[in-house]
Length: 255
Image (cartoon, rainbow, N blue to C red; front, side):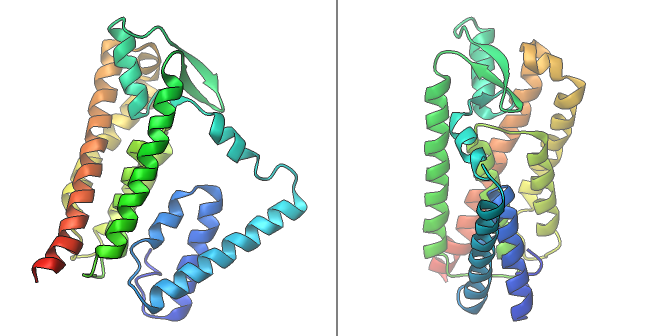
């Protein structure tokens, strides 16, 4: 992100290449490119990202078998217990309205039972909707500041996080890192969002590993922690989207 904000072509290409490499490991680094200023910066960064991703993908396909096996696994994943959908199922199970259980699948603890598939499809639809909103924002935004790439990356990752079927502790590391980058610029509009992420991160550390068995069993304590944490994440995502839109689209329209 810091490379994308520089003025030199080499920096833009480096930022794009790093985003391309990151996107092959986890998709979200590609979201960092959504806020690049129109024109030369976008062309250089996006081209570098695409070339890097294609070269890396070709290398993996050539020298390693089943290098894309993770894509099939993603298609079969359920609802992880720490996700927003998982919290909804935990509340329903606590109220006696849902008879499902927790199983270890695909390297995570997931809920298994009725309506899990439906919630998974809803999660994918919300992810597509979030991507669509970001594309609309990109098309309509006409006001860029030095902090726009940072703010956009944080808002995008937040939206994808709350829509995801999985929210693991590493997600909070990403979000805190992006929030810290936003705060390096006086032009950022994400300060209130960063403040919401601090207690969310603290609750995440409390949930895993301190109270993780409570989260698994759906005890009142575990439920309270997850409802508060995921409520803060949802509020942060909606606030980030609103502030990104009003500062880059609505503000430009009013000028």
